[in-house]
Image (cartoon, rainbow, N blue to C red):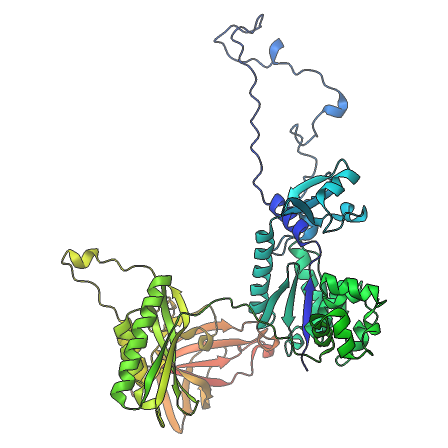
Amino acid sequence: MRRVASVFLPQLPIERLRRDTAHKPPETVASFEPPVDDDPGACSVPRGGHWRPGARWAQPTPRAAHRLPPHREMGRRSEAATHPFRTMQADDGARRGGALPEVDGGVGLLVLAYRQGQREIVYAANGEALAAGLTPGLPVTQARALFAGLEVLPANLEADRAVLDRLAIHAVRHWTPIAAVASPDSLVLDVSGTTHLFGGEKRFARRLVAFLHRIGLTACVAIADTAGAAHALARFSGRTVTIAPPGGTTEAIAPLPIAALRFDEPALVAAKRFGFEHVVDLLPLPRGPLARRLSRAAIERLDQAIGRVAEPIESVVPFEAPAAERRLLEPIGTPEAIGQVMSDLAGDLARELRTQGLGARQVVLRLVRIDGTEQEVVVGLARATRDPRHLARLLQLRLEQIAPGMGIEGGRLVAARAEPLGAEALGAMLAGEDAASDMAPLMDQLAGRIGHRALFKTSLIESDVPERAVAQVPPLSQPVGWPAWRRPARLLHRPEPLAAVIALLPDQPPRRFAWRGTVHDVVAGDGPERIHGEWWRRDGEVWAVRDYYRVEDKEGRRFWVFRRGDGVEPETGDLSWWMHGAFG
């Protein structure tokens, strides 16, 4: 079942103004500089001399006790200093609503106004103005006549819309894939199948309200089966969080006033004239006569709220992926023709990427067949590029994967992943110097034939446990160093147990062991290298200890073995021996 959340921001313009005021840089205050007196008068020390502590002009002026500085400022060391971080307010990365300076404080009645023709209309009001009856839609002249001390500031509708757009994009990236701006003061989110990731609908709504409070916005959140019902509950339920049970949308909005259904002004006036005050008054009435009295648009709003008429949500798109598309006059099916279409699409996409200053890291080719099905080819690149010839060459390596069927009538090439890519410096090439060879095209061609997983480098990562200390990285990345201790070039995927081990405890290497059915007599050994477990990962590694040894048998084969435990404390391991790798 579909579930929709409505986020109502009743004080968005005022709170946005408060945030803008709070983030303004402080005004610089000129430091006080006392006037210079070249003639200090009678002084116990002549001009050009040095300061004497007992000089009359150096004695401090007596001050009242309440104006004396604290003892620590005067140089007394016996008084404990206040910890510098205890007086700081907690901050989790976002400014909290309570930490922002209130615009209401010290301002009194404040309204934001916009111009409509020759009049100024109240767009938003702060808490004191709303309590005094200055509601949005009131003419500013009438508001000034009622309250002489009213402060009027111009409304910035573009800034308010920008805040909503940023919130919608944040919602798409972090909460749900479908989110849109529903009105100048609200968002609508399609949360079907996503709220369980946050602990349920109620917990998701509370987290949403807490997040908006941290950034200085007051919000009311409602979740229902339809966008119209969620919109009505968020504004007229009187609660910060309202959850309508699945299937109970009609019962939830029935006691709400008619204004909750998003009717236009003429429909509201007509409903009031006919005596309709609540939503429940409209539900049992036939739609035909009701449409003649209120309007067809009002009936559509009512049906959208109770779920009889679908109301799609046009979600915002955080990033519009660059794309190129071609429609063919005649279907094609030969490899040559398909390769030509790939080259044309690569050229069109390269021009679009160059216009936006981007480079493609992954491109997706979709070829549409006559029967309506699609053939999809995905190509990844080791480095961002917009070279049309290179893109066309990589696409043509996948020709054997395409089944044209009865023919292909169109294609679309999309840069699914793109990165900023600046201009290429050609100064060295124009000067006649040999440019450094670029390995990225070769890596892309090899990956197109054998796969991306077959091309990698090994790099060191922060871990004491050997099997966790090395990871695979992309072939063009720069690996990070190598440990100072000698390690085998390749480790076993999992350590294998050794049998028939003869060794002296607690710290001697093994003298004989059997591995994979072969007995090895050790003639030389080095160690131990003690490695402790990573206790922060799991409880089983709190006391874990490994003692590693490099050993060589009489045939000259060198191995890397370890013993579990330190040979003293039984909690550190069971003293079993394991093979972890081989040298050479």
